[in-house]
Length: 441
Image (cartoon, rainbow, N blue to C red; front, side, top):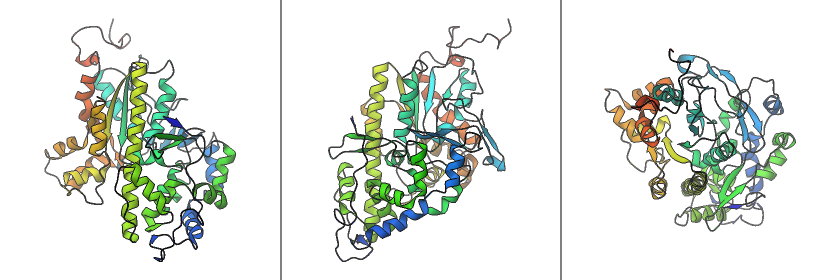
């Protein structure tokens, strides 16, 4: 794997990539005014100084805390975001691991990594799927999930901890929805629609720049460091000139811009992304074609990066004698589409974990659990509409009922994955945990 310490490929708006072909603001961009249009597109993303003040204040009651490599880790929080309008309590130790409710004093052989569907966002300590399984298995499961992380960022998080003496022999890597995309983002906030930025500027401020990954022209993984790795550089996000200079020429910014506006400021960016994704040459004949081509290029590129990251993770586990399992989780909209039998190819029904990714896992003998078919099978047991079914389990993220579903959707696979089996399923007294203090005598 190649490592790069510099920036993403940058483009000069007015010389290198802007091809004037007389289609105005649609299709391939006209060089005249291109920089101003991208500047206007980036303007809403300039960060307020008070948002960063709170984010960096160790005493502030905010959701996340700064990390030079990963962008952020999590803080203890009590946020009104739970089921039935309740507040949820989430607590973390210094390493960012979530507080355990079951068997926290016992040695642990199972560590879980991923994004907010691993972390258990919108439920309290003890209501995550890990704690449901820990209670059922009668052994601890540790939770290192961080809301908002992509495949690459969760991989870095895993390396940081599993390279120490506190690592575990069994690693569960949960991939949700657009986690592949997040691996690419230099600054994930640029992927958000402007109308949600205000809600991200106070207690929930995060998605600041972080370490990220891409591919070179040969399809090899290229790693990029955090472009804002300290407090001084973080405050520069408050300056529009810096935002335009640093992110306006970013390869992924170009893809996001084209996907949302239908204008390809630099045709070469979409062409290159399509090529490394293994896609045909993009159609840039008009605004709608540009949007479709940019979306397809971004999706294919992201999945290819996910494959390369998983290759590295698989190699790390093999070198260290660790066992790896991948869990695939889904958004409520994906579950709704699957239960509602939405036809394949519907533009609102994204194939987040495409066959190419699952085939890669199979080729590497990496066990995985795809929970979408298990949702569909569960849905068939009810007399509910697809929306009613989804509303039982989701409040954005899984509610406590949804986490219970997920735990038992993966239970049997995880049980077979572990050697020896969890204490609850063993027929001898050689359990991996000791129950002194739990049982009489």
